[in-house]
Length: 144
Image (cartoon, rainbow, N blue to C red; front, side):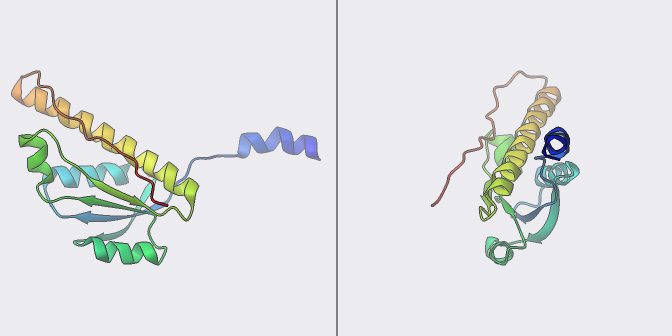
């Protein structure tokens, strides 16, 4: 029996995490913020749990363990990207389930990086310029 388990279980084990519940706080309501949100949910890893206008409302869902990740899009997100060539996002991951939080944050960071690359390509094609645009930098901060 242990030999069969050693042969079958490694093939069946899947560390891919799906159905990550996410809360979105969109202060901008712009075209780019909507494109980013659409891109996040098109990945198939995330399910919308809450869409609100305040972080406090989403944080209540977070505290009741209904949400795994909160993404907060600041006001003037699109303007900052286009005019100042940089913007920031706030991500909060519920680390009660550490694996789900870290893998979910990594998935989300990858989607944001990909979104940023697409924006750069669109900007260059639209303006016919080779411009050095800033990246959306993903910085991890752990609070203990």
